[in-house]
Structures are given as C-alpha cells and as structure tokens.
Length: 132
Image (cartoon, rainbow, N blue to C red; front, side):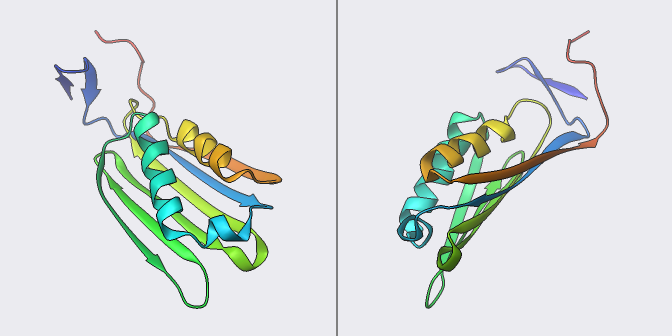
C-alpha cells in the first residue's frame, strides 16, 4: 500500500463498495434522453469524489439508454427502461475515497423516482480508516 500525497489517502487497497439500485416511477422522457442521463451520471460521479476516465453511451431503438463510465476507482452504469419508468444503476468504487452511495443518491435526486430500491455490498478487505 502507498499514500497518494495529493489527498493523503491510501491507494491500492483491496476494498470497495458496490452500490446496486433500481429506481421506478421515473418520467419516460428523462429515461430516453441520452444526453440528460450522461450529464446526470457525470455530475453525480464528480460530486461524489469519483475520478471519471471516460464515458460512453448508447440510445436504443425504439427506446432506452445505457451509459457506462470508466472510473479510476472502477465503473458506473445506467440502464434505462422508459416504457415502464425504471432504471438500473450500478456504481462500484475501489478504495475509500469515492462515495458511490452519494452518487446514487444524487442520481435519484435528478430523476425524481417514486420508488428506490438500493443496496450496498462491501467487497474486498476491511481496513482501518486512520493512517499509521
């Protein structure tokens, strides 16, 4: 393990959080708007301290959008189903600097769902939070 001098955070820890969410009751026009979903994901990741390396997206015919973000910390994805007002969200970040739960909360704020089902899976090893 080493220390990132810019943030005084340990790097290379085999630990992470995987947040899986399903949002329902979202307006179909938002779920079919590729640019809106791409911008919303970028903003949520930035505001949750994740480092975005690249984002790709695809709008499907007749409807639906997938957005994938490659992060320094791992990845995030959105898969929308406008026909039933639903979206799957997946955010996995390694280490303990990024805040994937916050990213999902911010996405939910942007989308205004009537129902949110979210769970976090802790992965890898547990480490002490203090530096020694």
